[in-house]
Image (cartoon, rainbow, N blue to C red; front, side, top):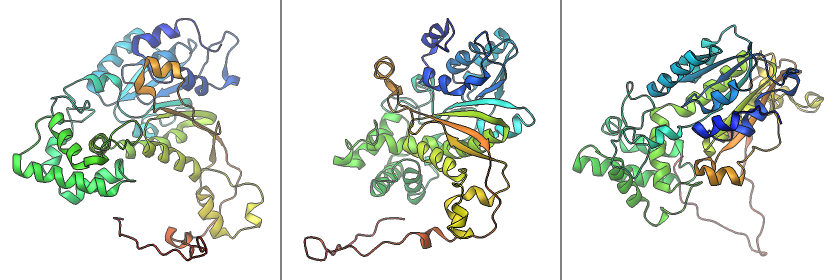
Length: 380
């Protein structure tokens, strides 16, 4: 009922992912005016083609404001047109990791971020985001800056490429990451730089062998391996960490940050941010040492004046009807994080190394006989 007339028409123009769930969480019920609209300043960290931005604008009053970020020149061009159409909107060309600097001194009432690439970028064959196409091996969100994937691969070593693939997608299959990296670099040495995404995808798929169809989420092993290169080139995970830190610097107390993620690595970063900014339960400081309190709740070792809470127990998945209409929404998860006043006191100390806080126990007997497993070393 919070949706104003005309919003679904806007959705059809761009088909943004999880718009109803994300906007339903973005606006605080207490901030709603009698006429049903919202005052305040909001931020869309990933403008894309403006689907979420237009949806947000449809809910704002005449006094409301919306800022948006994007690095894609085509997206910025679309956003400039929206600026002319609606004076409440302003585009900030640049990475969303700079939100704290770009909006320093601006009290923000809500932040939305739709992490990853947009559908129009995937559909643009010149970028190489569609892996089965004959498009160039580029993978940049801003093709006017940085190195293309083909240029970077021509300089990468096998260990470097294996690290990227393991770190950004194949953390649960590090041996596959090594196999793909070895095959890609060897093929490149023999045949020269890759000229199409289909060529790169074929080499990666062949390296995965009969593990190829063991999907990681909705993607095959080779797709995850290649997408990891895209995430590395565009600093996607680093930018996500930066924008989470920066968003909560500019958000006002009780304001909300809504994050739409698509990959397990993105979910892990969001969950890690939440855990690092939780206030400890009252009284816990009486039962554990200061060092242990720091290890369990890192917030107490900082001078931050806020904590965060997750609005719901679990991330919100798309409804079946949305998945049927837009299959790319299938893996999306909506996380809603609220900025709350900090209660805990500052604690000084030095947490122990993580390796000292986890210990593998001796396995108990199994079937009345001790079980001995000969481990095969796996890469660290």
